[in-house]
Image 1 (cartoon, one colour):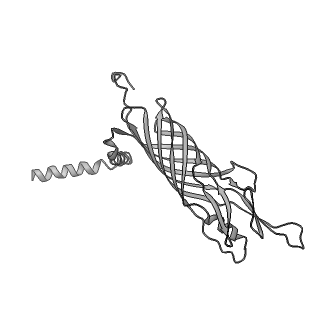
Image 2 (image 1 turned 90 degrees about the vertical axis):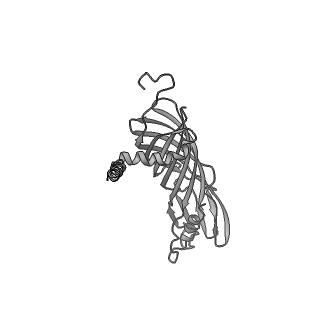
Image 3 (image 1 turned 180 degrees about the horizontal axis):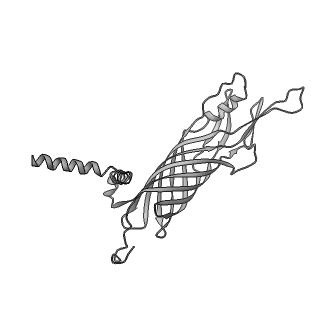
Length: 265
């Protein structure tokens, strides 16, 4: 009976440590950090963030004749005017007792892409061609492997690669609008897997984590499209500025530098 009661107490204690979100975040982070423990790393923080993105998806060349239609890839003559957002979850591990850390992230980005114009050849009865304007949406899942350096107690720098899985837009019915063939061809030209790089600077205030980042594609978003059996060169890159606000669901207590344990951190 005593053995049974002791086991019931252990089970009750094990259940109680997962009750609150803060405790749950701690144990999730702890379990996720086990593979890194052997390398002498310490779980420093775990959080979630949202970013405002200012996106540029400039394409080359600017004008692409495709027979009956002509594609203008920079119809609004603007570069950094496309807005979007990014959602991410991340953990941050301190490397040994140093000021360096690693920060893997799992994210999702949605942003409006470049504005295009599709011009058709003019009807002989009218002096000007018809124009259709559209802006595709960039949607992708991301896995980032960032590394950083704490430049101060609350400030840090970070950089690293980002692996993106791009989503293609749905194919539209072209029965009544044959110009949508160009639109569909551009959407299907998106390369599924893309590599990008990020650099940033950040600051923490308690459990709030803010940073500014620049992102540049290292491989193209698209490099050609096929229309009516003909392949057209069409190289498109992505560049973004991100203003990120995060909240740390778990934050480890800071450790003093070696030899200074007697002083408050």
